[in-house]
Length: 391
Image (tube, rainbow, N blue to C red):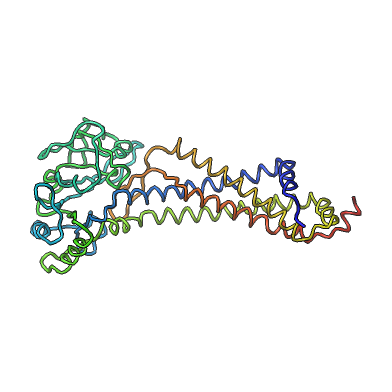
């Protein structure tokens, strides 16, 4: 015979203070857990936004980023002629030579960090998703004009249209702001390829060559051609593989989220456990009465576990709501973390996905069940004689 659920509901409502404190404790743990995890989710989404299965990166063997790579001009010319390369409407190969250089810029909070300046030719825009200019205009080829991503403009000083970006002897005039839709390019400044080559003193080659192939068969053919060509001696990898390597940036954040979450969960579990123990002590006569009415020990155990589950669920719901409000209305500005492959800052926004919210709810339920199990077991083992005599 099971104890009616309305008994558990009335019990939670009657003990408003202890119920509220337990829900608050669980909700705070879930809120912090979701906020830290949304950092890692923001990095993950940034690196996977612009991935195309038909784009390949040709770079130095062993290089983990375009900052660490170098492709000589002669090898670039050979890459253009390899089989599998797609062509545009004019019959030109969709091959984009690119140069990246790091400059040190002050953020709006006064601290300095590295930012990537990417030198590209017009073909680079054909190999990427639409990157619209949302303010100002496109830079002119052959000049030291540059366009800055929306996120970079929001995070770094002197990056508005009309400003001059200067780092050492390198200098660019901002003429436009572009929106890269949350992709890795939202952390960059773009300028004319030859201008960046000249200012970075890399006129004899490029950092990386980005290639568009016609289909999956052509992709495999191109990768094999690069690997088998002893004159090129380069490595071709898909964009998915390339950005998966960059995801190492999110690993420390994910570890931090789980570490902090586990520590706080332990504290919240013991808090819930103390609350449930206090409720068991205050309800000895109730438990004895239920036993006297014929309810078995397993029903007592299940009843108290249901209360703990309800507390966990309510705490998880409140925590998810709090985290959603914080991400939606407070943590709206782009933030950044160091990309240890490029030594530049990767910009991203907090991203609270439905799967993360579900994981927070599961986390809260686990806290409630763990915190409620031992008090529930104690309630189920209580002897009924003494409490009934005292009544």
